[in-house]
Length: 123
Image (cartoon, rainbow, N blue to C red; front, side, top):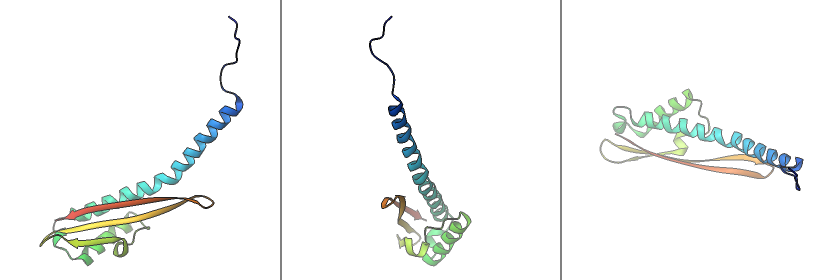
């Protein structure tokens, strides 16, 4: 059997693919931690909202509970009194809204902006 053409990738093609793979791996290392942190934030707000009698608590009491959860879970990029809004829904219900952004520097003046939003009802 005679081959008239070469087969396979050249060294430069392999280097290019490895560089692309490294780029996406480094991007994942930068972008995954804020999403993990957001999951912790969401579970903290959810646990405060689902506590018995949470809807009848005042906003200050809910902020205090959230600050305690954030301290225990080492969540430092959220300030409950600044980033969280609590609205009354009725006599014994509250709406807890959270909107925040995380800016992740990637390289030089290139950054990634991640926007997170949560809403929970406390009854």
